[in-house]
Length: 166
Image (cartoon, rainbow, N blue to C red):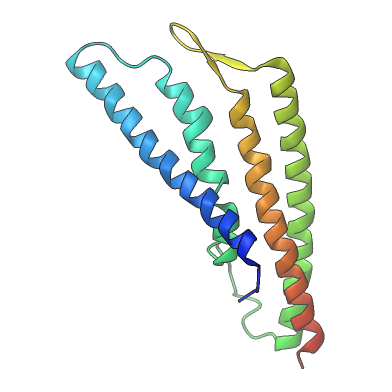
């Protein structure tokens, strides 16, 4: 396992904890909305927008670094299973570099989008009001950046393994 430092580990765990809180809040929000709609004929205004604009985004993007750290992404080893250790290590380096390239691109684009959303003070219209949505746009670049930092350390570690393996 990669030696990734105490601060990075704490950040990864903290964002994952925030995602867990977002999931619990999302469930409570939906339950209260359903009870309000079914029992009192008064649903909560903006539930769909808040759930899709805040909770779901946090639940997906904040734990990305955690999933990466604990190798929770789906991998298919059908063709790589029988590779010699050195070739497999180099393949890991190449795959990590490609992943970092895409992460950098996604992070940049989501950061630009978040900035534009901030400048425009983006809001979504609900049935009765407006929901300010621009703060949630920063969840993507934050989650992707932390994943990118971890992936960088992992690529360095994979490179060391590739250079030292036989």
